[in-house]
Length: 233
Ligand code: ADE
Image (tube, rainbow, N blue to C red; front, side, top):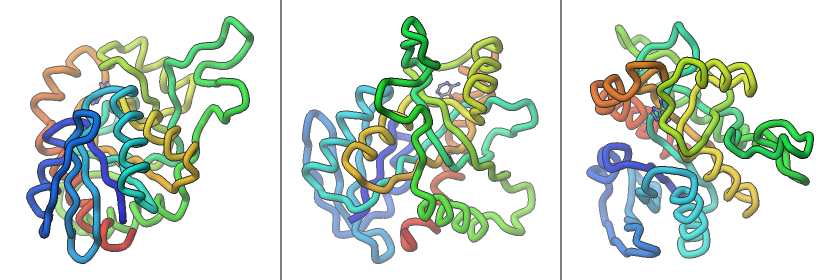
């Protein structure tokens, strides 16, 4: 069983529409649909936005559906100037950027006894990059792929100062609102995970308008990658 989570309706609906032999149940207000995706049994859930929703959803899915591996997929805001909407970021690491114990001399994102950057499982990262090649190699005008850190926090970032800080403090490529909470929960449960995001905006002044304009194209790109990845994961 593979666990797949997205935050918003748009981020799960393409996959949901392609599942066969489905059964759904609701736990902690979250609908989980079990089904077959091209020969792989998956449990798919829409967590809702933000780190608390992602944490609850991930732990619930682990406890009740016993996935061996988990993938979080959806959209993110890019943090580097040369990125395009639709480009794909596969997280090598995730960090909870709004964890702040700097008053105790710690670095942003760091808590006692835990690593600051949580590493995604390397095998799932390579499967995601191979799936990118399978989906987009030779596609005219197709997205670019970047591998690196995704910084998560409970803010929709629409602010050039904040985006620069995220890039410089964490060497992050993209920001979103769930990945590190999901990753943290998977790590505490000893389960392999990866976060895959397509860019909807560039986290700067026009981010919310760009987000609305690019959401469906970004979701289509992450779905194309998931389509190739799920049967191999
Ligand atoms: N998800 C997509 N774009 C985002 C942004 N700019 N900030 C936070 N989460 C996002």
